Image 1 (cartoon, rainbow, N blue to C red):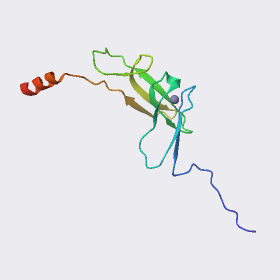
Image 2: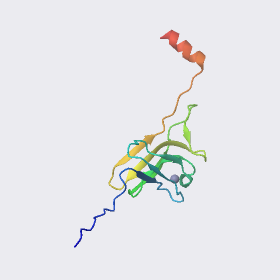
Image 3: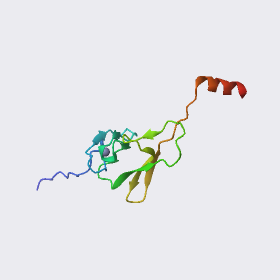
Image 4: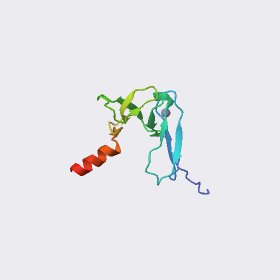
Length: 120
Ligand SMILES: [Zn+2]
């Protein structure tokens, strides 16, 4: 009897497939193994917020957390519907998670910064 080649049905090691966990969104991407960046996309399933994709086949979901602090003029991340976002969490069924915080950015006029530099 001639030997029969044994073929494993595994994902190709040179590519990583990603998909979105939100209902109503079909976004997907493929990256190479050397990429350490998670692909993000403006997600119609979350009202247009920019959220990360999840490795295809992984049991996980993306949850958006609203910002609970007062917005006092700093630049914040907003969903297209106006909600102020505090974070996006990738929650996996094994209990692990990733949290991406949308940190607010303070602003100042150039004259204010120059004045502070001279005071210090
Ligand atoms: Zn999506």
